[in-house]
Length: 337
Ligand code: EPU
Image: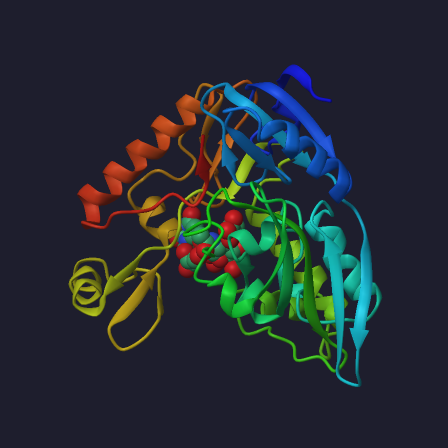
């Protein structure tokens, strides 16, 4: 039913070598239930892998690792304005985005080229360029690991926050996401105000962009800033952008006038962690075979053969340096194992 002692290197975008005691894949719900029935007889720990794009493996993995390979995409409902596109959790996120665009369905074009699987997307409410999954989310279907019962979660029940959901919080480790349905537009509302999208579109000579144009612009921006995990191991943003009080922000701005930030509400400001790390002198810092990416200080990279522990220790040094320089405590976005 499962293989013993399997190297997870091909299954994590950091490209780290780490051995799973037991490893199996599943490509439909029945296979998953069969695996879980057997697993529930043991006391083994369980790790569910999607695209492996948000995990730092610092040691070998005890117990069972299950890789979700359930595939399938389907429009399950539609009306004049919207279509409900359902994706099985094992679909690659970017393929899902491209299928939506091919069907002229909008709302997720800003989320082009985010690595990982569709099932992992709602777990951490993925976001980029002014859009988050929660903005287009309809519902998801998840299987309870112990009872093997299926439950539908709507957006409220998922308790989405900035890179957060109930599946990282109160229900952590209890459910496996099977599928997700998004409510996508037929009459599009483009969101091009964030960051470099408008500049990129202008550079492409486009005045009246389509959702495909926005997707292409996002792809170009991401490719210029973020390393391709197929070439350089990484997990996207390693840290979250921290939220501080307005008073704290004002004190920092007096000391660092160019500090990059986003307003949140009257009392809070979000700081760009990439800026903090960059200005503290860490961007591009390289140690033997790992380091901080040269174009985006939020991204830690494995140039090949690095150890998860080394990358973890580097992240700790960055946390310490940022705390010392700015008095701000960063939080890791990536799951550490
Ligand atoms: N900045 C620097 N130096 C750096 C990196 C950034 O000065 O090395 C400055 C930039 O100049 C800019 C600001 O920091 O003024 C913000 O940078 P950027 O627009 O690149 O976005 P970010 O806040 O660093 C977030 C997400 C990314 C997402 C981008 C675009 C988080 C933790 N990260 O990054 O998400 O792609 O916005 O929307 O929220 C991910 O989660 O894996 C990820 C890549």
